[in-house]
Structures are given as C-alpha cells and as structure tokens.
Image (cartoon, rainbow, N blue to C red; front, side, top):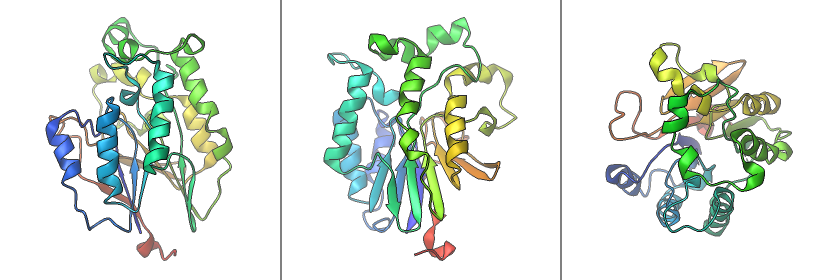
Length: 259
C-alpha cells in the first residue's frame, strides 16, 4: 500500500478536471489518496470527483478547503451548513473524513481555518480575498477567529491518536515556516490567511510522522521538529513552476516493511 497526497485541484478549470478523470483505473487500487481540500465549491462536481477517485483508490481521505465552503448563486445556506452537506456527501460516498486505522498506520484529518495569527491582513487583502465575500457564516461564527476555533475544537478527540506511523492532514498551514524563505516580500501579504498557530499546536500535540497540507499552492517537503511537512498542490493551470502537477507518494508500506 502506498499513500499519495494532492490538494488544490480546482477542477473548475477543465484541464484540471480532465487530469483527475484520466488517472489510471488500475495503478492505485491498493493505495490511499489524501485529498487536502480546494476541489470545487459545486457539490455536484465534488461528487463527480469523488466518484472518479473512489473507483481508482482503495481509500480516499478528505478535508475541505476554503473553496468548498463558498456559497454559490442560488444556494440558500450558510458556509457551516455547506460544510455539513459536504460531510453528508462524504459519508454517502464512502469518502473518509475521520480517523482511519490501517494496521500500523493511522490517518488523522484536522479541520482548520485561518485566524490572522500569522499576521494582520492589510486593507488590500481584506478587499481582495474572496472568502470574505463568498463565505456566509452564521452569527456565532462572525469572525475568522471564531471559524478557526470552531473547526479546531472538532479535532480534539483525534489528537491522542497513536500508532507506529501517524499521518495527519489539513487544508491550511499549521506553521508559517513551511513556506520557503525565498518567497518575495510582495507575495507574503497573503500569509495572514494561510493558516493558524492553533492548528500548529494541535499538530505538535499529535506528533505525526508526516503532516500533509495544501492551500499555499507552493509545493514543499520540509522536516521541522521531527515532522515531515508536505504540500502537493496541483494548483491553477498557470502555476507550472511551483506545482508538481502529479500525484506525490508520501509513504510506501512496502519500503517500510510494515504490513
């Protein structure tokens, strides 16, 4: 069994959707796919992607990203209700959204959002960041901090997961130093909406061997404090230089000798 990871498929782009639909029907039948969010804000398209991937992999594990929680024209629901609808869709489709034990390896999904603990957003970001217009939260989740806390609280019961190998995954970044140091200063204005220190503390408590994340669209594999952090974002069609544009194997049980 191999473990593959990908995020930020953004299948609203036809070429991205075609890449998913054209993945081999045979090569991954014994393998696990971690899908770390930002597939589509359209539930029917999300279901299409789930159907395709589930036919190709032994297990598909998923956490939603921010794009999944955008409210489309004609949708009379909040972003929280959309999150719950996605959860129901996953349960119906057999897509795994809770802790999964596969022998000596455990997979732990961590829900998350951003809370500006990576920095304060400037006025341009507040105007330009689409979440602030496309997400519609109920009154008790009126701030990004409240949304982040809500999702982090849902992770608490999973943080004591222990096994020979633990792989956790989130859409958002658990620490800002996973970003490459060479990112130009003008590109760092988005850092406030990349993740949260609270998520990072949960990853520290869990102490996984590997943590998969997405959202930044900057592919990365870096070991920090004995945890390997991996981002394999497929990204937008134009993002050829910073994205691998392929599945990335993050773990191979045959090589580890664990069965």
